[in-house]
Image 1 (cartoon, rainbow, N blue to C red):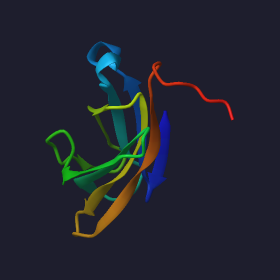
Image 2: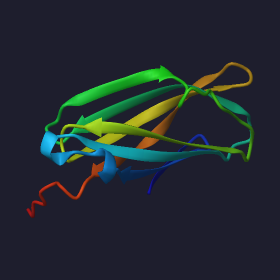
Image 3: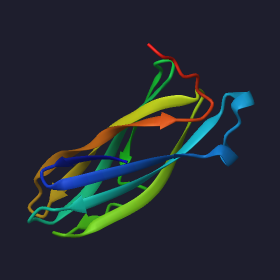
Image 4: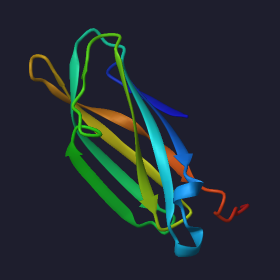
Length: 130
């Protein structure tokens, strides 16, 4: 698992390779990632937007931006958490994801919460020893 805290908002990510949805012979590899967002702060926040940067093993980058996550813009009061699972396909057997959430406080202040960089690894990648 990967985790990072920004302004008392902790983001924990667990990537999972989906063998049953992947087809290595067709250069199609699929991962799910489970995210838990915990509000350890003293103020209520709402997740407004997401930004992902997904890089495959060949260095190709895909940017994903949009409102909320999985169709929701959750409100997190102090001590509350929100969890969701999403996924991403790649054309290579490994990659990396990193991103951020745009949060808004009840008084309209906006700030970015970092999502930790996490590795997308499959059993089909070649291991290189340096």
